[in-house]
Image (cartoon, rainbow, N blue to C red; front, top):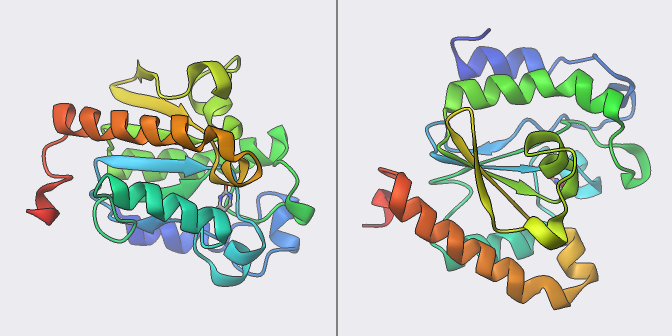
Length: 194
Ligand code: URA
């Protein structure tokens, strides 16, 4: 257990717990405010993220930033963004259960130190792992579920929205629900914009 984010990050950056370390350019630890009340969890770095060392910086990330902006959230100000696995799975395949098992300790520590009130799962990989094995994005997106004192909500992965733009409108509804939930349960997320 860590008592500082700096120490956690320093150790994580050296991680060699699974084979993904062998093919990474950069480990992608996370980005944002360490005191955020709202955390987003994606799947794992893609090519651009691996090259730049920051989550969601490709086309999907640009779409995510638009949704965030629509509800006054900003990756550098009032939220934190991380992934289930910190290193890029080759060819952008899904991270395996074993790779997720190896990596989830880092995410747990990030969550323990950040102490978010809300966690938004971006896509099925993180939703299945963090909300429930049977989670179905098509049926359960936008629904908040309390677990261990944290409200979890799953929504579409931005890359999936690029592939299937029909889901962009329901995804936007999820972000609007998120804004309402933030008003309801968060204390300072929107303060930075006042
Ligand atoms: N997809 C993810 O799930 N995470 C990223 O950081 C980039 C793409």
